[in-house]
Structures are given as C-alpha cells and as structure tokens.
Length: 193
Image (cartoon, rainbow, N blue to C red; front, top):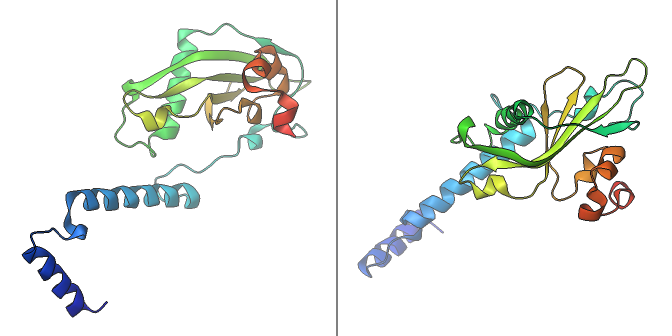
C-alpha cells in the first residue's frame, strides 16, 4: 500500500469517527508487549549484553560423571537459611526476565524436597532442592514447576530451572524415587527414556 493510500485510509477512518488501529492504546500495548517478548527471546538466545549466559549445569559435574549423578542419596533437613539461599539464586537468575521484580517479592520456595547424592572418591557431593517459587503477584513467574536448584560440594546454589511438571529431567533417579516423585510425576525411566 502506498503512503498516499495509507494517508487517505486514515483520513477516512478519522472522518468516520474511528481511531486508527495502529494508534489505539490497546494496539500500542500489544506492540510494546511483542517488542518486550522479542527482546527477551533475543537476549536469552544470543546472550545479549548484560544478560546472563545460559549455563549447562552438566558442565559443573565432575569429569567422568553424568550430568545427573547417581549413587547413595539421602533426604536432608530443610532450613530457613537454605530457603534464603535458594530464593537468592532464583532472583539472581530471573532478574533479567523480570526486571521490575524485587528480591523481597520472591515466594518461598515452598514445598521443598531437599537431598544429596554423595560423591565417590574425589567427586564432591551434589545437593538438590525441588520446590515451587516465583514472584508474588506475577502469575507468569508462578506457572509450571516444580523448580530445581543444584549445588556442587561447598559451592553456591545455582537455579537449574523450571521442570514443566517433569522433575525427572533435572533430578537424579535416586533422589526422585527417595522423594516419592514417581507417585506424583510418573515413572522416572519413562521420562528419561
């Protein structure tokens, strides 16, 4: 459509008392939302300046180990100090996706299963926590779950991500079974293939 045709169409719409769709508040809001979503997608895919690099947690696994360790596992007591560390890790990993949220708005994590898979020989123990989290008042951040955190030995907690109701994709078999997740989320081997 030529510039003259567009101008004529807009003039006709104005004379008829209609707003141009491109200038309506809802159209501007939709366009702004689309731009934000696109920018976030580009940042996540391309590692835009200032955005955190996507990190493969399997890179933290000891050499010769699989991404999800196996071996002796145990439930551990969950404390308020660990809850704070997990919330800190979640906030740190999500502040680029949700730039208007504050650390104080992080919910929980709640309903947490916490445990360890002990290392063999010189391999460190790997700690896992699974629970629900997000930002208070932000339904988008509260969708899905459960969420997973991982910690190698004495290192800091890392937020692994949302599992989309399939924690078997991010949690070792031994802990998955120990926590009783098969009754809740299905057989571990069905998920891992």
